[in-house]
Image 1 (cartoon, rainbow, N blue to C red):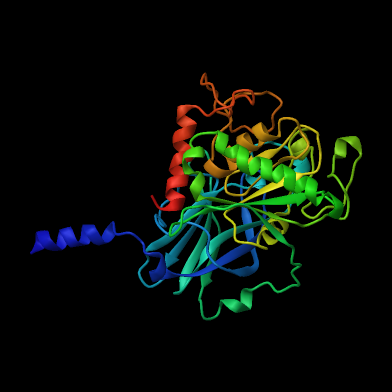
Image 2 (cartoon, rainbow, N blue to C red; image 1 turned 90 degrees about the horizontal axis):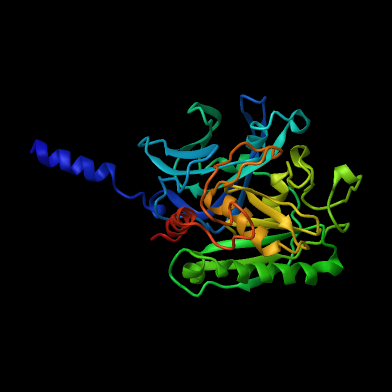
Length: 367
């Protein structure tokens, strides 16, 4: 009898978290401010935005595809069970590695999760390379009362163009949305041409090619008031939708924004898993932050290679495989492997990166 109970307990402890037992088919976007100093994270809750549909994992909910700087954990209050967790990084997490004081201050950040159907606790944890863990935000969520925390403000609706549809049905898809930054209304065709090129070009690379049938690509047609983006080192300022700028962390080619709320709100004109920002510029540069966003210039000759490289960071948490003294971000992984994460003219992934990308794809599509 004791042995039987032990076996039953082990089976219960390792049982798969079933999406429909704990979540409804809706998405919560949790908005918060992230501040503090170079060694600590202080997050303050701003509010929730709710959207129809959940585009994300429905299996492997209590596992992270990859570890990173931030972790979000949802715990069922009645059982104490972890029913969802995921990891991501943010621009402020990268700032903490730079010793660069010019980009300190408050960052607007957000994270998207499925809507719990039972009282739950949502915890945001900052994890450091030293192994230290810091709980920087914890909120109690009651699905019957959460509407008091919803952010209500006028949302501008923009048209959405379908670029590439997943051909597999009845399975989870991976929904990628392209967002235009610094493209005026009469430049939307220019933006769409680049986005289409990127959507097709990704599948020139393995292992993406093998899973092409599971990807959706869309584009939100949202014009900016002015053309181009900020380049502070050249005295250029532009009025754009998401406040992206070159010279992030005083690095001439690093493009970033502290306004993630604008990204997630713009992307939420459709269902999406990952947001890709095309900036209307030719100047070499870009950025990719795991489960947060990737960004690169739509007019640069290396646009496809930049896309594949930066999306590798944002989608699969791939590290750079080179060391560069003047690069402000210290998260480098020197390697003697040939890989596009090392140099853009190496138009393929090494076996290690292929394995990481495939692991994330398979977890997202439930394989």
